[in-house]
Image (cartoon, rainbow, N blue to C red; front, side, top):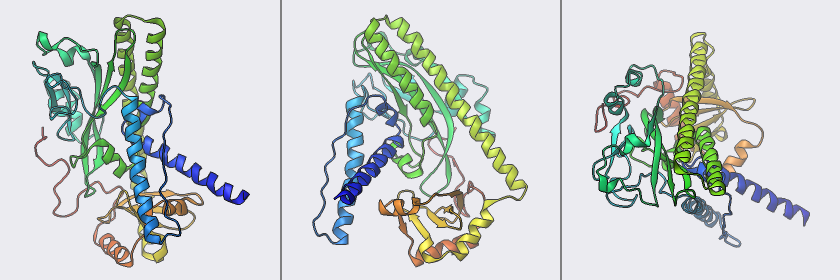
Length: 405
C-alpha cells in the first residue's frame, strides 16, 4: 500500500511541476503568480488499456492542461492577454486589437480610438530616437523605450478620451529586437510591447501587465514560446506584476487618488525598462564569452558532431514540442540539433532527466531514418555554433516584407 501511495505522490509532484512549467512558458503566466487560486483537473484513464489508448488519453490530458491555464488567466486578468483594448469597437477581440507582424509594437490610438501598430524601427525614427541604428547595424543590442500613457492617447478626439471604467492604459515599454527562430530554424526579429493597464473605479483599480507581440510565422506569443522555450523577459515581467499587485492592494486599503497611482505606475515602467535592458546586456556578455571560446578553438560543435557520429540508436531523440534532435554523449552531455542539421546548443543533464522527458512524451526515440537523415544533413552543412545563418537558398533573416523598415 505504501508503495502505491509513493507512486501517486510522485505522479502528483510531476503533474505540479508540469503545470508550473506551462504557466512559466506562457507569455502571460506572470499574471497567475500572485493571484493564487486553484486549478481543477479531471483524469480520463482507460482500464486495462492498450498502449494506443493510453497515448490518446495522454494527448487529451495535455490539451486539457493548456485549456485550464488559459481559463485561469481569464479569471485572473482585467484584459484580454496579448491584445489592446480597441476604443473604437469597445472590445479587445476585434481585428484592430493585435499586431500583424513580429516587428510591430503598439504606437498609440488613432483619432477615433483605433489601435495603431508600427514596425519598431519606424516608431524610433518617428520619435527621433538615435538608437534606431542599433536595430540595423548588426550590433545585436536590445533597444528599450518607455512610452507614457499621455503619448499613446495624444491623437484621440475628445469623445474618445473619456476613459471607461473597464479599461485604462497607463503607459508601456517597447523592446526589440529579440531574436527567435521561425519554423524553419532561421532567426527572426521580434518586438514586444509591455503595457500596464487597469480597470475599475478610482481607488479600487485592478492592475495588470499585458504583453503584446506576434511570432515570426504569425503565431501568438503563447504558441511561439511553447515551441522555442524559455521567455527572455520572464523575470522582468514577474517583477513588474508583483509590484503592480502591491500597488493594487495599497490602493484598496488607502483609497489613494489616481494621480498617485500614475506616479507609482510610471516607476514600475521605468524599473521594467531597466530590467529588460540589464538582462539583455548580461546575455550579450555571455554571447561575447562564447565568441572568445570560438576564437580560441574551445568549441562544443566538434564534440557534438563526434557524439552524433558514434551515438547508438537509443541515444538519439526527437523533441516533440520543438522539432529538434537531442543526441546523448558521455558523462551527461547532450547536444541539440535543429531539423536542418545545425548545432543549436550543448548542455549537461543530471540523472533521470532523459527518462522523465520520455515518460511524459516531451521526447521520443528518433527512428533510424531520422537519425540517418540528421547525420547526412550535418555532414553537408559547415559546422557552426548556434546556427544563426540560413542554409543555401533560404531567404536571410528579416527579408523585406510587410513589416520591413
